[in-house]
Amino acid sequence: MFDPVEKLKEFVSHASVSTDPAFAAGMRDAQTFVSDLLASIGFEVEVVKTKLHPIVLASRGTDASWPHVIIYGHYDVQPADPLELWESPAFAPEVRGDRIYGRGTADNKGPLMTHIAAVGRLLEQEPDLPLRITFMLEGEEEMGSPSFPRFLADYRERLQAADFVFLSDTGIPSPDQVVITCGLRGLVLCEVEVTTAKSDLHSGLHGGVLRNPIQALSELCASLHGPDGRVNIPGFYDDVLEVEEWEKTELKKLGGDDAAYQKFLGVPAFYTPQGFSPLEAIRFMPTLEFNGIGGGYQGAGSKTVIPSRAFVKISCRLVANQDPVKIRQLLYQTIRKRMPADVNFKIHDDHDGQPYVVVPPDRANTPPNQSPVLAAAFRAADQAIGDVFGNPPLYLREGGSVPIIAQIKQTLGLDSVMFGLFLPEDNLHAPNESFDLRVMERGMRVSEQVLRSLAGC
Image (cartoon, rainbow, N blue to C red; front, side, top):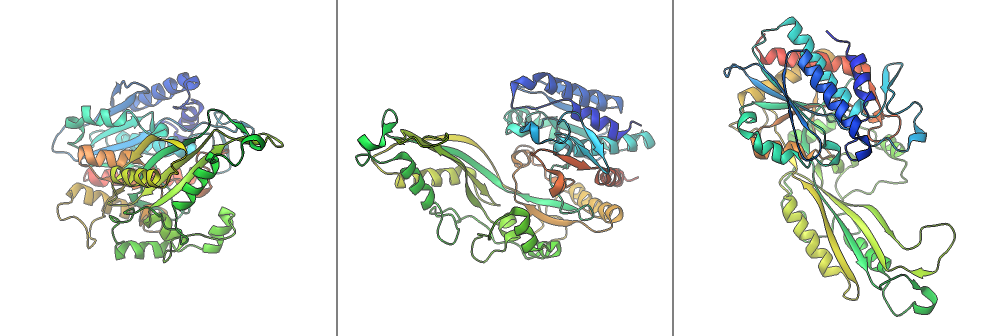
């Protein structure tokens, strides 16, 4: 059996930044590394070509009577910039104390290695394990998974025979408290560009005769929320479902110190929709946010111009039962209605993603036709997490979005068991990203116990 920490160090050393063509060699090396590693523990590996970065599909077990689990992960990472803020090089992983530092250690190479190592250890002990396992690993998650829908459609017949998807690309609040994520917010992204004159104008010679595009855009942005923080778009909340009581109970178990959270964020005060605590707002409510805004002179000192162009980048996070297509239509209708007639504007589409919710077994709203293997997987995870981490898991929605989980549900009809492994202090997408090796070892034990349970061993 290989040393999982040493293999993780090798994995992280491949600079697999999917969004930057300059890292093409790192992408190829990371894909080759994970393919070879899976082959070394007995998997038949197929590398599926896409227009960008390949998808690795690795399988073992052929008996159709055996339960079948798909383990999802991704081998691409975010850019490491700003490099000067790293205490050690981003792609020269370093173990310090109980942590391994490097880009991708927590998102997603560390959690992925956790499952690969667990499977390798299990198959070494049980080479004839009566369980079909398929690893489905992509290289475009950090750029919105553009090739994934086509891949799912092309491989639908082969993959929909599985029982559920098992993955670790979500978070936990502390090393001793695991969360099984039961909901992910959907996503709608766009950019609004406002233009007026054909070029920037002298504000003294021309000020007062035309509307400034920054003013037009600022007034539009201000109109998209009410004074209470709610999104001010007609129909935006129409399809939002009431939160189930068991979900509220689970969130209360999480606890949470609002003052500590406020200090962690570094904000003078919270600004949440009326009737919702900060933690409730993150997990249960949709949002509209401005992710970037610009226009005019940005350099040092002053430049007295009326800019010809301004822009804003907008994202909406959606909750269960909201449709990204409908929300996009409502957002665009509102923008068109509120934009002044004396400016020109364009709305540039970006990608979107469906929200996703799965209900664990034995809840009041558990679907009556829930897959028995999925239910068994939830129960096995509950037992294993309690055994290994010392506390039973919490079942919570998460504020973030993983659009491919909803795509898997839509195309394959498969639900997911999302076993969180990364911590708030792991610095995902930021300098000095790291992964707790104690969590990794515990995660390996949980993964191995869940898979063993499903195989009936």
